[in-house]
Amino acid sequence: MAGEPRIEIVGNLTADPELRFTQNGKGVANLNVAVTPSKNTGTFQNPNWTDLDTMFFRVTVWGQHGENVVESLRRGQRVMVVGRLTVRSYETREGEKRQSWEISADEVTPSLKFATASVNKINRHSGGQSSTQEDPWATDAPARTAGGADQTPWNNEPPF
Image 1 (cartoon, rainbow, N blue to C red):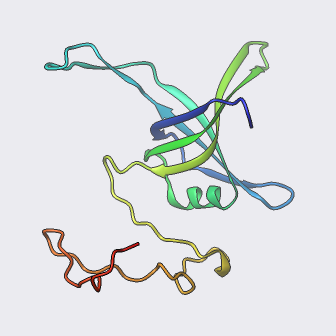
Image 2 (cartoon, helix red, strand yellow):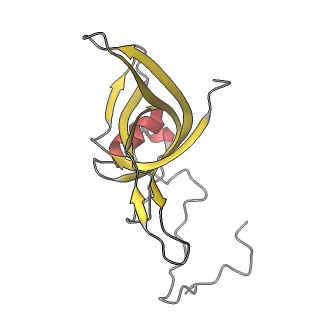
């Protein structure tokens, strides 16, 4: 929606993402992300990083994207989220006024800073099953040597 600030966060999942469906059958994933910012209290040459207060964000991911998130990510994994930030105010049963930070995600990805990932493209025509049959770009990439050089040529054509 217009007027909602854009936000990018990097943090850890506090639980496995949960998938639910609307009455119309559209999937919606909910996940909780803990973000602990840090501050350098030292100098550039001699840094001393101090953790600040942890912030918790509820993230909503819609449709196939949400289904992919639930299938791919687990509690404790570091993720990057890009989306629109909203603050929801509510009152507890005890009458306390509270606020929660919520993000409607446009992108959710695993962070590869401390992990590796394998990406599998989903062919929407195959009912959500991984398939590369109809994808013209899904050809096997040339094998690479330990130094990173291709073992097979690109037929002297640029990749794009």
